[in-house]
Length: 234
Length: 304
Ligand SMILES: Nc1ncnc2c1ncn2[C@@H]1O[C@H](COP(=O)(O)OP(=O)(O)OP(=O)(O)O)[C@@H](O)[C@H]1O
Ligand SMILES: [Mg+2]
Image (cartoon, rainbow over all chains, first blue to last red; front, side, top):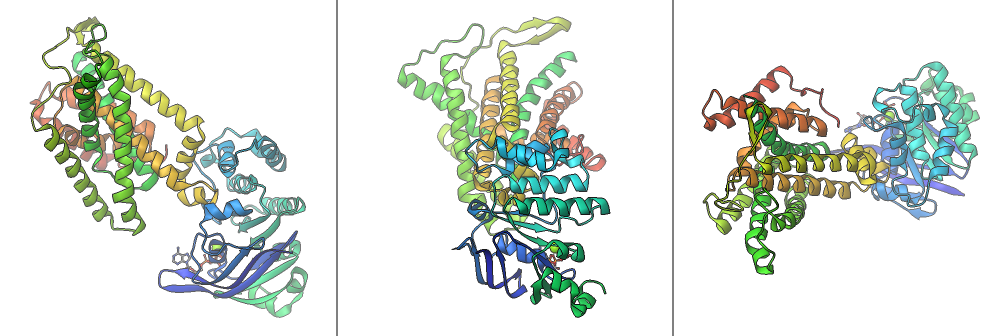
């Protein structure tokens, strides 16, 4: 079953269109990666799906319902969460407060969920009363992902979760993505570490200059010589 | 000298109530509300109406508490006037600033519209109450208490400091403990991420204007009790309020409190050397100095 789908999505900033007719989909239990060169429009795609940019054409469907043009605070209530590429934590709040903000719209007791997130990222529990502004990039990324999980989303969008992290941390983040996926969350991830991501992905899309130029299973893309040469650095 | 510092703290506490509101609003909507001083004036006059008009009509006795210059009438008028100014402040945002924000208007246009709002509020006050100086309770000058070091302070002023202190504690608890308070801090940090998290940022903005307005109203009433009421009172406090806000680091609530106290003391102490009419100039000079030496404020600024 498809949990997320875009059909002929067109979007951009100001006068210029960045995305042209992008159609992608994410099925239940999948990890799907979106790769492509800098400036290809990967972040623009996620922002448009999440309602931070208003689509100029096309449709976004989430768990069988159309959400095209809805604002982010409405979309998040429909079962999808999003971790932006940059500025994805509240620096003047503590770790715990960051997670609480992720649960802002919950009116039930979310203590269990908080425990679950702390189990996934034990480091966060140790420092839960620390202000986030002082923490390292890896810790911030964990907080950002933890925040996004607080609403028990069925779909998670991750924009470059491993960007600018030390190599050992990159491996750790990918393991966490797999862990989260195993709990039943379908994940769409944008990545620069294309090879690593494709290894853990069921399927992948290659985006270039705002267009979908290739799609296949993760394994097939890795084995494709031409895609490798053009988009995975040889 | 010590006495001037004490009076400076009293004036500074009033300025702080204004600058905290300014800084809260700036932190959330990135907008310098030039009408903030006139919200103080509005608060003072709404309280005047409640104390002299409505309370008399309702038959609330015009007695005073102990050696204070006011009684039940003011005790009731104070929170009601705060709520009224909160309402005015929210209304200003909804009908004036929000549409301009939605259109992504130029900052100069926003500033002009705020100045316009300031004049409208002030003109309404002048039309309804005239341009004379007014008092909540004419003719009574309560005896001052003598503190050590020869400092004379009126009972009203001690209560004033207690009221400001309590309001700041309440605000602190609200920002640190309540869900809406945390959402306000989160929105000040990163509005887009707040929306992505599901926070209804429009509601946060309404709360921010409400709290800023309520504190401004309280500041205006306290100034009216301590000094007197007049149509330009709030506007005259605008400059020290902005200086205090910048001094504390724009967006920093606790910085604005300290900045307010510093500005109050600087203004009062200056009267030992200069004519009191130069007080606004002192505020202006301090502001210029901060902008030249440490534009990010004494606490590094930016975040609360
Ligand atoms: N806020 C913005 N305003 C105007 N143009 C923008 C904005 N953000 C991105 N762009 C432009 O849109 C295009 C796509 O940017 P986008 O951030 O989606 O690329 P990306 O694939 O995520 O790249 P990266 O790998 O560097 O993150 C780029 O040409 C970029 O310059
Ligand atoms: Mg990007």
